[in-house]
Image (cartoon, rainbow, N blue to C red):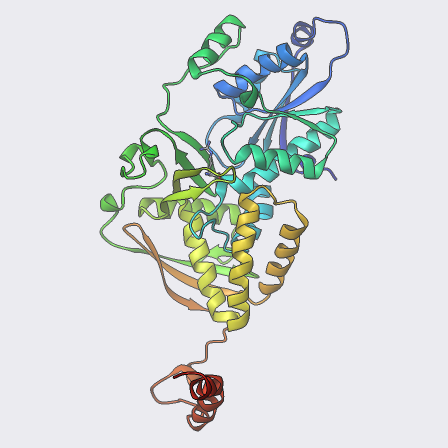
Length: 425
Ligand code: ARG
């Protein structure tokens, strides 16, 4: 079954009159599937694709947990001249097929960024490819610019799924400032809602919000309060902590506190809200973009930070020392692949299979304390715990064989003893 049929789908088809208007020339035109956000860039792109490439535009708006009205977006697309517009709610698929695997891999790019934007791109690409196939479109278009990672993620994911499809990235081609775009829209009857210009470039989905540009480009400047939307300033967070118990099964969160079974989407939403209230999940770092540029990035990702901390903590309790340590390397490589647009690569798929195998016994409960910006793990338990109080204790009940320590240390240190005798002056 093609992916998009599984999504909740609202499909707006242009009226006959609109199609007529949009296809004044008699000849059959090729189709392009455009990833449509409803904003200025992609609204202008609808008309531009018609004019520059003489294409029929099919607009696709995809929800992965960001705010905004999808129906309004597709209605506008049709009003502008798209022959068809899809509104697709893919949040649950995003959570299950992209956030789940990333969390199992404790995926953090450069050890810091939970990859919210990065892992949504392959899903969006997949939906676009499915719609292109269904509609017989030869082209896919997106609104990414030439300096970011997202263009690479879209283009490479689309190529991996259907190498025959051609990609058009209008914003890589046209040379228009925001003012030029507004003027273009005015001259070409593109109805747009010109909002007050946001001082930042932002992207949001259920796994996190990213914020860059503007004053943030000064790497030394502390982000102004208005850079944050999901989280309160830790200074203004409640003076008393809040505890939350996260229940895991096979490496995936399955419940919170007294609720032992909850959909993962609800868990993520709840932790974004709770964590946000306590100022948790703010990230401010310098990031290595795939295109060779270093950039200063601000993220808000309370649920991601809480869940990755909790998940990794539980792994420390149930994975062997070797497996935990080896997996850290796999996690780093996987995070880089996800960041670099290689989600659909054979290596990423193989690493995901490895990670899945490691999750068999990652079951239990982790208690997290949310307090003024921190999400600290303060307790954990598991039916598969390798933590044995009888071995660990310094008090009564100790069953560790103390005499065997001496022999072990003799053998363990033997190579160093040998080196010291033979080679050290
Ligand atoms: N730097 C992040 C990434 O590459 C976020 C990019 C978000 N895009 C944006 N237009 N703000 O994944």
